Image (tube, rainbow, N blue to C red; front, side, top):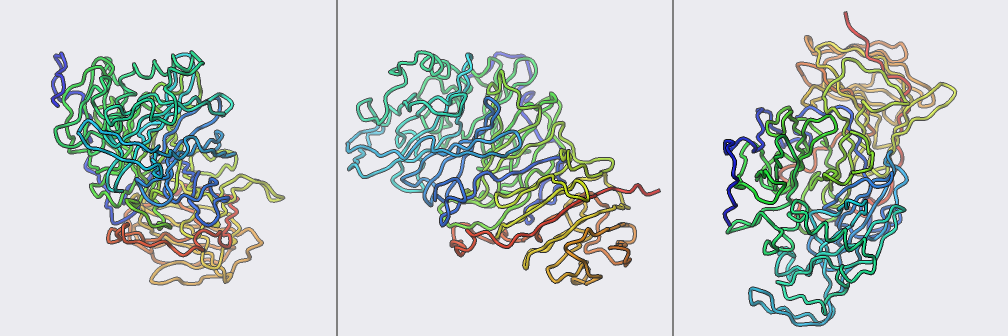
Length: 610
């Protein structure tokens, strides 16, 4: 359907967002060879585990996807959908995780349970007849989860539908309807109601498992729901599932296909910029009541992995997405930034690790995807801080959150470890890993511990790009049999120039043409390391407890940009040649914790070269 033209004297392209730089990822690498942002804390908050759900979020579902995030009364909340194995599978439900400002003290509950469809026969608006025998179950699918009313009530939402086949979405004539309940300040949940049934699909009030919202005796809750239904921007997010016949869906679908996963942000002159999957964008000058033409933006390269846009806490703007047209391999997760919300550049890496998928499933694509931040209006009266918070799924089986330091930047003039303030460090922290500040008789240190069988913990820092870099490092290394303690210096493309390994045999190795042992170490003692890298000669010198040696680079790089400590080596798999639809379950031992690998980091200090 053709969109209403906006009455404006502005040029037609003035408010359509564009990416103006030439940097794009090389998707043969999980990190895309894109330079990382500084100060990103990535935390896995839900790790699928069929064998031991008590070590996960309490449920044995192995499909987790479509998370949404908000901050409410001092805690973050993330709602995500779960299905037993596959996308669009009967028996799905919604989980709600909450945690504190430090991503700790995580709690879980089922927020919208499995929906059993009653025995009935209905006819949708297309004339199709649907018969249910009472043994069918719906599943949730939603683009958004939260709405905060003007009087401070927080509504939690989901959408139930049914698919005759897993490749069919539960939208429109297969949808049952959108449900709502209140999330109270203490984290408890109110009753479930339908806020917008899919009447066009044939669902009448008598056939619904929950009452309509206006039957609630709490009139404040009813008013909050009414306020949501009047909000065109929030309701536009319902376009795929509830269909675009509802009057508050202002942007109608094209003649063929759908505009998917809408989100928005406000820029100057009262203009609202709208974003959709597959590089579509539009703008409105009346807060979403009418919109200009929805256009495809070629410079925003993506497929069906979603895009998220927001005005950041420093008054600038950020777009977060997987800049690849390849839909089965959704990595790396990157951010581009700009001053005006229209012109964006400076592509930088947010999440560049992709572990092996542990569980098979239909439409379980690889990588970090379906990202959302905290939607406009959700933090009125709250103070989550000015940093950017994101949530997303990885491989459609694990849920992650990230705190991105604002202002968004990609280098520091120099670094020195302060165990009490890690804001400048990048932390990649799977559920079975931890990065904590601790103390012993030798002083304060950062402890990095990892018992994860398919990925690793990473503690890294971006640096000012220079050809010569020197560092003083003090650490204790306690590696596992198959997980060495790893120190790397890389260039801005994440290509390693230097790789140092503390292996389980008590030897320190450097990687050149192969792993070369240079000295012994004692895992109970602090090792003093001095390291100087020189990109003009592609060589480095290293001193470990006074034993000095010189070596050539692992890779010839033009400069040094990142210092990394990790509990294992990076893995190449999955690759672009791996078809996620053909991958079986990994052996069940991948659901068991492995022997820990631990790094005790006492000192990291960059030495300025003259």
